[in-house]
Length: 148
Image (cartoon, rainbow, N blue to C red; front, side, top):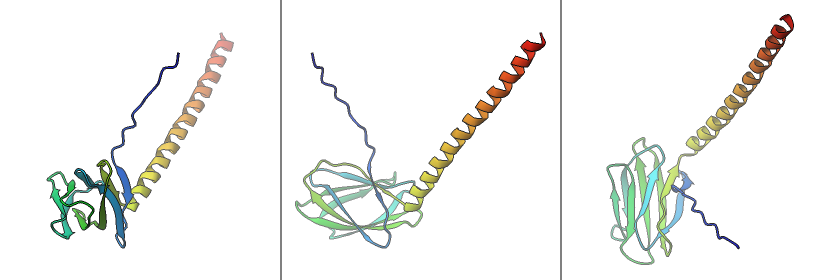
């Protein structure tokens, strides 16, 4: 008997690296609201052109919600964060399921990678220290049994 196994992978958001000197082109759902946020920073303000193409709300949490008003259009959006992060976006509405978008600063990604390496080094170092301590205890225990 064959039993089908299914599983679900939970994805918080699709991450895109900020490109403050370039227009970041993204496709978002034409059938519902898309949530956009800056990693570790609230969105404080936006500029959108053209104005009536989409409904946009910047929530007090710092998340931006955008939903199309007209089919098949695109909108240009500038997002400004609380720490003065700025990103220009060209959002094209396409037939797909809405999914959250996270804009990540390249420096944040590098910092996370460095922290991950440091954590791995700490784990390795702790493992070596444990082995050395175990080896010292074993020698001491074997000496104690020989002395008795």
